[in-house]
Image 1 (cartoon, chains in turn brown, orange):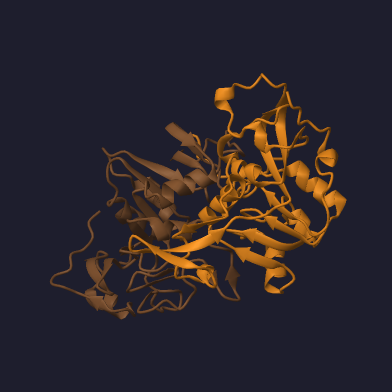
Image 2 (spheres, chains in turn green, cyan; image 1 turned 120 degrees about the vertical axis):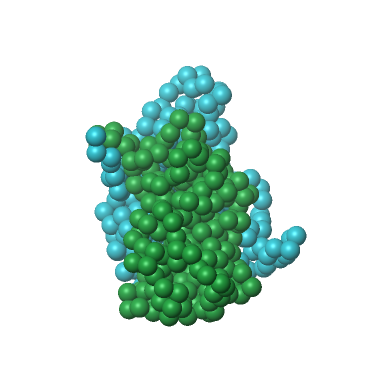
Amino acid sequence: MALSKQEIAQRIAQELQDKWYVNLGIGIPTLVANYIPKNIDVVFQSENGMLGMGPFPIEGEEDADLINAGKQTVTILKGGSLFDSAMSFAMIRGQHVQLTVLGAMEVSQNGDIANWKIPGKMVKGMGGAMDLVASAENIIVAMMHTDKTGESKLLKKCSLPLTGVNCVKKVVTNLAYLEIKNNAFYLIERAPGVSVEEIIAATEGTLIVEGEIPEMKF
Amino acid sequence: MINKVVKNAQDALLGVENGMTFMLGGFGLCGIPENCISELVRLDVNNLTCISNNAGVDDFGLGLLLKKHQIKKMVSSYVGENEEFERQMLSGELDVELIPQGTLAERCRATGAGIPAFYTPAGYGTEVAEGKETREFNGKMYVLEHAFNPEFAFVKAWKGDTAGNLIFKGTARNFNPMMAMAGKITVAEVEELVEAGELDPNQIHTPGIFVQRIFQGKDYEKRIEQRTVTQKS
């Protein structure tokens, strides 16, 4: 069975380490916050100017002055802090954030990512994604392996305008966990019940399969 | 004591003309200068270049200026949530420069800090870097980005005093402090205006030196774009 969006988030959450500062993008990445492993402490950074982002507020306690990068009302946890946008991106470009999780429309085998624009169709802007991918040492992309028509989104070369070049090293899709190196996707784990053949068929870019590929564990 | 107080938005926007470049604080609808935007609508100035992280929604924030075709060019990082904006952009009525959010913040900061340009890794290898100078430092490539040159900056703070000192609240701080530094004339509207001396100097986010005019705002709507809540268990 291919993973649900929640399960993709759950698998990514297994990569979190104690004392990490983490920036989660909009969409599947946001769900990662629901699956933080017990016994570790991580702090979520919201690029609009907050460290220590907490869950949504209890109904009636929403504050228009406390939102996340998706413009949703949130809370701030004990030990959190607030700051301006220049300082926020100083944290990001200055590599003080240990992990960035973001979504993508396409990823290529050399680690390029496209997630901000479909020419003539969707032009919403890159927000903070270009700053994040240009600087982060540790980026995990959360995405579906194929688009709605079944076309692969893991490509030899991205067809859409790029967000960043040579920056993605890990991808978790609904089918697999892959690493990017040596200009190829390396298959590390399969979604439970998904065969290597299915993953090969769904991957347009060069896919390296070495030895037995284990199933993800939850 | 230098007193920066003006009576209202009307006085604060004296000197605003067609064709000018403005910075407007805010992230989404959080921390936007609501009173200044209303006054820009009332003045009906047009041909404006607006530097702001977002472009409001159809019926609020900068969307109000867009609806009246007062804006010639937007400089932003993210412009979703606004159908009229998308329509004007795709039809070519509106000139749009999309730039990475951190680059936008730093360009605002640089403007006020006397830095004409700086190198950033954001956007290297993408269409954002097209036509821009690039350079390698320590094996990594960077793009040269320039400061802005706005005539006015409009910012919104939670509290301010008569000397122009500002304190922001929550994530409504966002772009406001850097834009306050950057305006040739910076106009600050505040939810609560107090006498100089009443704010603790240790708590000031934006020192009054950056603010030329300050006024007590009114009728704040502080609209929430995405109301998300946790149900009581």
